Amino acid sequence: MRAFKHNRITLILLATGLLSMTPAAFAATVPAGTELAAEQTLVRNNGSEPSSLDPHKVESDVEANIIKDMFEGLVAVNVDGQVEPRLAEKWDEKDNTVWTFHLRPGVTWSDGTAITAQDIVWSWQRLVDPKTVSPYATYPANMHIVNAAEIAEGKKAPDTLGVKAINDTTLQVTLNQPNAAFLPMLAHQSMVPIDKILISRFGDKWTQPEHIVTSGPYKLSQWVVNERIVAQRNPRYWDDAHTVINTVTYLPIASETADVNRYKAGEIDITSTVPINQFASLKKTLGDQLNVTPQLATYYYQFNTTKPPFNDPRVRRALNMALDKDIIAQKVLGQGQRAAWVISQPEIGGVKLANPDYASWPMEKRISEAQKLLAAAGFGKDHPLSFSLLYNTQESHQRIAIAASSMWKKNLGVEVKLQNQEWKTMLDNMHTGNFDVVRYAWIADYDDASTFLNNFRTGDSENTSRYSSPVFDEALINASRAEKVADRGKYYQQAEDSLGQDVPAIPLYHYVRSHLVKPWVGGFNPDRLGYYYTKDMYIKKH
Image (cartoon, rainbow, N blue to C red; front, top):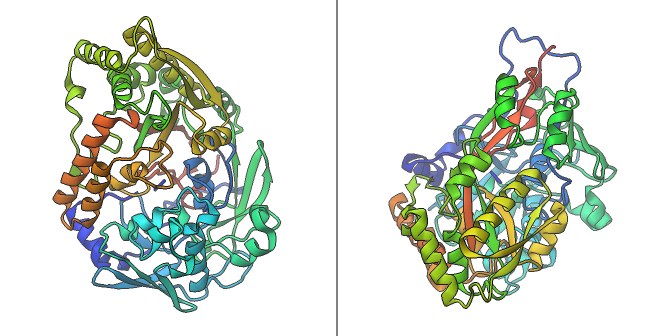
């Protein structure tokens, strides 16, 4: 969940730490002459009820949208792909493996207590600790922080993690190998500090409004489950002088139709999305309020690869081949989405990744091959394949599921039972392996193919498909060691080729983000990952 454009030059700058001198620009920039509204309040629909507001317990943009407003880490990545100082005022590095961060003088939690380097050490140790059961437990290992992988596997103690507090304001991080993406990866919401004292005192209830303290521009003031979350401006935030909006409300409206209706009624300033069946009409009637931007994200159907018959790659590959993804992207959706044949992106992090050969075949040839694969796996007219397709409750997911199941029925004679659940319930079932095929999506945590591909590594905490391939794992290991972008691209292609043959998940399309935004909302500027920050915005007089 996360953004930076980088080409080869940017990678070099990131690796050498030269971008540490970039001045902070994460703030609302109000054009000269703009008259502001007296009441600076914003209402944004968030699409679902968050499963938690604990940065170590969450995994989707539903939670990240809120957490990114309330918590801040050492660095951030702006809409131009530049790494910027946040809690860290500056940093330096030695051999691209030892990084030293210097916290801003006087930076505090929202209750006025100092944020220290030790807070960050403890927070990262909690993240990798298997007892926390974080979906992002292996993220520090992907960053190549010393001992992170062994700790996540339960082989070493959390206090052996390669991070230490030199003093209250100085943090040192040691990597087991150079990592060109280390700084942008550090901007992820799982890497923000949280308060040890609160957790020791209140346990899982530490995120309730009466207990929580935050490090970012907003602090939680109200949480009415399934109704609203309200955050107030944090006057102790280090850059509060550049914040304009005083109050932000997040609504958990899952219905896209209800979202638009409440927007039209003036109850919402920014919608979570735009219904695909209303997109064309809204473009005509509210075109100046419609915002559509590309996003580094992929929508896919994930298999439970340990559950027969989906432990057979022939079945998975057949289902992938039998879908007409152009129809799904262009006709069912039609907002600018692109048909997907790779899990990551066709162009990401300075490399281009090719589709599997069968992606370019005529649809008739793909269907014929899919039928052969399914027959070889033991399925046909006398023994049709049947399974459940699980998705979280939302109109667009339902429309896509209906289209996909119809294609499978027509092309392969497959019987699909559609099953929808609320977001939190679906996540629970996904992580416990209680599904056949599940709708999921991944928004890049940073601009590199590994952010998508790591989710299919053996033992990764986000590998809910339970896929395991030594060939795939080796390709990612080699990519992580490659110093040149071209070499990384070669290994990422090998990894994508493995996924194209084994198909632990069917990529359907690459995202765009669409929102309706009231004309009085200024500063709305989503990054490549699709995130937009309340502190960057302001309300014009209207």
